[in-house]
Image 1 (cartoon, protein in one colour):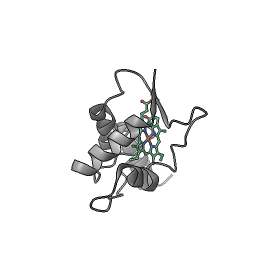
Image 2: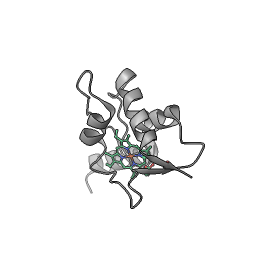
Image 3: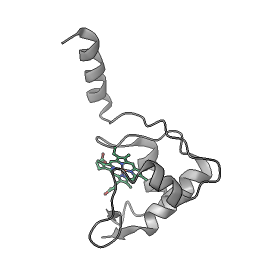
Length: 100
Ligand code: HEC
């Protein structure tokens, strides 16, 4: 392996995340529009027709917004989805989640 590849790879492990997604929503885009453009490739509706199964702790707009902003181990972060767009998207995700 070339040293640069090793460094890039260990950076990903240290950060513990899947990197940044540069997607930026169009001004005024609705929650469903943003979801289709940025999220639907990975998140498909489940058998019950909802996209997510969220625990009570995670089933609120701020927890969802936090997930989008920070990402996860396998999910990229979306630093360019902010403000009203992030709020609209998070509300859409919440209304399309099954709360456990
Ligand atoms: C590249 C694939 C990918 C994309 C794009 C993606 N996600 Fe995810 N998402 C995941 C994976 C994998 C997980 C679970 C593991 C993790 O947290 O990293 C996840 C987890 C989540 C969770 C937490 C669910 C739970 O059970 O706690 C939410 C909420 C979420 N994603 C919302 C979104 C939204 C909103 C978008 C669009 C802005 C999005 N995701 C884009 C792959 C993706």
